Image 1 (cartoon, each protein chain N blue to C red):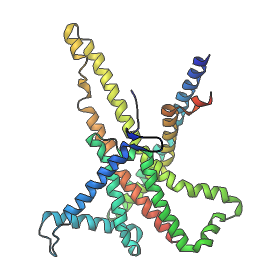
Image 2 (image 1 turned 135 degrees about the vertical axis):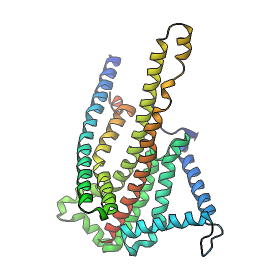
Image 3 (image 1 turned 30 degrees about the vertical axis):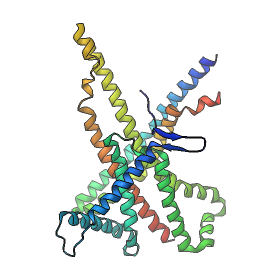
Image 4 (image 1 turned 90 degrees about the vertical axis):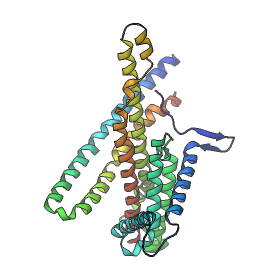
Length: 243
Length: 87
């Protein structure tokens, strides 16, 4: 059994294009096309199913942001919805057989760094640049290294959490898969004669059982991790803006 | 000799990965505790169910971090084998 990262599609001396980047582009294109499709021909009074779905999604995003960040930050709803959408769709792309981009640490670290920039922006805005630097010396100046570590751990822990959950799901599914393959080879190989020799190559036990695991590891875990990522982003920005 | 030292490092990495995953114990207990408390809270105030659930999920996700860290360490030890390079 071999656990690999995303496939590298193109490589030269100073640049390589990994499969997860390409999957992310596809996911971005799908989300964009979906948004364009859902928001065409909007009417004041919803007449089409499409518009009802679009309104439901927008309302849900607005309520989520208003409920967690307050009225003041309601303009962050598009960001929260975008993070949620790209995270869910990236993780769910594993259902289509692609390597999920969120199973690649670089992808989630990139998202987390974007969010970290926003958090720092709000921190500086709340207490001024001097106040921001001074907050590293709180409550006593000796704690400066600890404060720097805890600041750096914000994006790291966000990225590790998302990556770790998706990657552990992938590895566990793969382990179960190979174990079931070995089991069916052993059991069916025990049938005497030619029949056993032929059936040995058919991993019959791999049918069905991994799908049940996949409901948890792919569907549930993907959605909940996307929600948590989005939630942490909102909470962190809100706390930062309060100084 | 080279083979032997390699084997020892690999065995040590595997044992270390197994030991690192003991840290999965903590988040498991903590998350179960949090979920139990959330159930108690929902039992007292069923109308605040959605608030309690979202707060609980956030808290569970935060407390899961240590477990994820240990998983990352175990993953690095088994898949990347950083200690082989130290030979």
